[in-house]
Amino acid sequence: MSPREDDGVQTPAPTIATVIDLRLVREHPDIVRASQRARSADESLVDALLSADAERRAAVRAADDLRAEQKAASQAVRGATPEERPAVLERAKALAAAVKEAEEAERTADAALRAVHLRIPNVVHDDVPPGGEDDAVTLRTVGDVPTYDFPVRDHLEIGEALGAIDMERGAKVSGARFYFLTGPGALLEFALAQLAITRAVAAGLTPVVAPALVRPEPMEGTGFLGEHDEEVYRIERDDLYLVGTSEVALAGMHMNEVLDLSEGPRRYAGWSSCFRREAGSYGKDTRGIIRVHWFDKVEMFSFCPPEEAAAEHRRLLQWEEEFLQALELPYRVVDIAAGDLGTSAARKFDIEAWFPSQGTYRELTSTSDCTTFQSRRLAIRYRDADGRPQPVATLNGTLCAIARTIACLLEVHQRADGSVYVPVALRPWLGGHEVLTPGMSLVAPVPLS
Image (tube, rainbow, N blue to C red):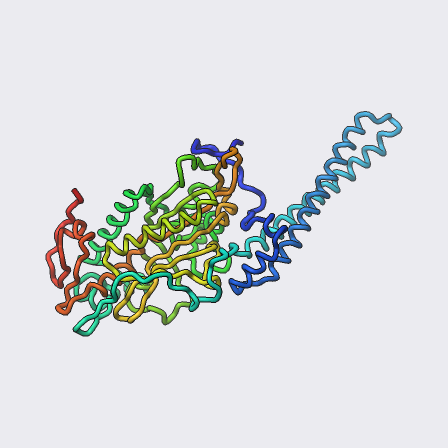
């Protein structure tokens, strides 16, 4: 079958998910070992991968040699004399059995290589700071931290007073860390989604409403299984997963395809509901809608040539910053340390916005450069200047994680009388309201002219 190029024809997925480039591991194992050390990951996996790779290559050579002997023996049968024929047939039969065993050994070696290969995360970028969660480097701080001449309330207290958030009934219906957005809270959700999608389309991204249920292949290909599988909701009866981000579906949309990037990167803005078990986070942000099991999100996703990935990463970050500036939120940009990177990311920038009730900055968005890590797993390629198919770089960036953004908006823009200031950019989607007040009359959103 010919490779797909937006024509509905797909190329078969490779036998081995190449994940990180095996050639890099063979030729520069110390680079991969250093990356593992920086992540505080198992350095011995590099040697295990090299060993599995050597065993697989040996198994492939052995099977190829036996197949060649079997072919020669089959030809010898046709030319054998009646006296020679029994012995030649016996040899051909023995070689057929040997080929069968060799092919089984090749499949076993394939599986062993794949197993260890999938355990090694992406190689971190040279400029990524070392360390763990507490070692992120602040690149810049934007906007002034607000001061208040009244006791600061948290977003849940504000949201309940406005009739915008109902955690009690959310828990009654779905359990802990679920919620209802009601009245102005629901309108805030739609307003943020409209603003995010409108800005994304203006920047040239294609809007996508993405499925929230995906098959195992894109889930594994984007790096969300393995060490992260405790975070994931699985529908066992159908062998489907609920996504924690539309990144999974957006990447999987083009798996086993060859993309045409002749006119520039392929960029999407994906809307989906997101689901996270938040395993191991008990006691962390259990109040309110900062850390919940379900929320909606607008996620940017880009496919571009690898040499353009660093510039594309900065571009996604710029769009995230511009969105938070439109919401009039103070924030800082941090370069995430190697030990706190996800499996797929070679580098990640987070934007942390100010939460007055906590007196600190908290993550609101992030953007990751996954280089060719995901595309190698998912067999997504593009044609280089010479027309040769090559792995494409993939990048993702959260434009708006809506529940957490609502929480931040309510806190930063709170007023002494219990009302909440509405940023100018959101007003067209909130009926022109300049403030949200308890008991306010809801007005239908006014479309942008």
